[in-house]
Image: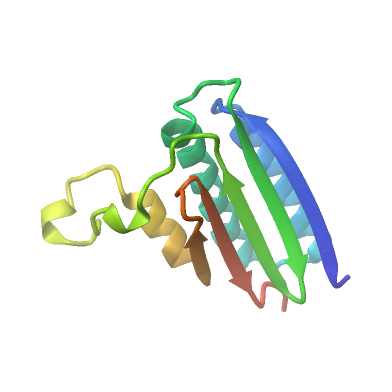
Amino acid sequence: MAKMYKRLKVESKMASLRIVENAIDEMTGAIGINQDNYGKILVATLEAVNNAIKHGNKEVPEKLVDVVIEYIDNELRISVTDQGEGFDPSRIPDPTLPSNIEELSGRGVFLMSRLSDAITFNEKGNSVTMSFKEVTD
């Protein structure tokens, strides 16, 4: 199984996280992803979708979040795109700095960047792509 592809478009409401979680479960199960990688992939993806729903689409249910899950040559790539204005990821304060330790925002992108092997944002800042390499044993 060298390639797999799945695409979802979900409404911007918290209940949609369950749909995305089921898709991740299905795909990682079919690929045979190990447990450590499964946890990283699930947390990072749900964080990205949560950000897209809350910050990108401002929880307007009619605005959709587009999730693309691609598996090619033992690398899983997940892209999450919202219909929002976008943002500048370089402007997110580092949540590990003592001055930001009390801040509740900014942790999601930090977490996503730590859990994935690579993370990129599009120019507008309304789409993130995370890569997870060597996901199977």
